[in-house]
Amino acid sequence: DAGVIQSPRHEVTEMGQEVTLRCKPISGHDYLFWYRQTMMRGLELLIYFNNNVPIDDSGMPEDRFSAKMPNASFSTLKIQPSEPRDSAVYFCASSTGGGYTFGSGTRLTVV
Amino acid sequence: GENVEQHPSTLSVQEGDSAVIKCTYSDSASNYFPWYKQELGKGPQLIIDIRSNVGEKKDQRIAVTLNKTAKHFSLHITETQPEDSAVYFCAASIRSGYALNFGKGTSLLVTP
Image (cartoon, rainbow over all chains, first blue to last red; front, side, top):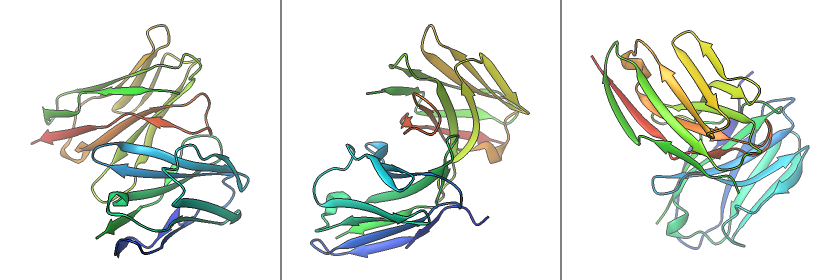
């Protein structure tokens, strides 16, 4: 198995632009999580899905953030419009109910 | 919600010594406690986990202990090696598969 696959690995964008982060979970995993990592706040849960259904999105910072999971093998996290304070590493992780498997992350820089 | 505190934030040990990282949690309903290791430029990787019906679990040089009464759990690494240098995160969840709340991490440096 190739593990959890995230794309892109790095993204540099200008303030105000739309950013879309992508994630392919491990086949057969029915939980998918999006986390954001910064030095100041550590690993923060943004949203998670179970069987493609959003279960808890209380960590999504504001309406500029949205996430979808149209099928069991794909999820997106969108930021529109992006702001410099959104700069962070965004991780996707998947699970069957045990420990998570994390992707390699997307490092987002908003200038 | 669950609050996980982790100490110390940085830890430096000499190769061959032991390293101990401690975490406390606030929600007495938590019953799943994994530990992750994150190397530079990579995502966190699960190294060991423990459930609330177990007091201790060991895997080679790594062990985790859990004290449910005191609501704290610890990671023990024995015979440390330079390749153990990384950031370690503890986490807690009310059950495995549910969302994890992570501690702020411990940066471990093992010097030869």
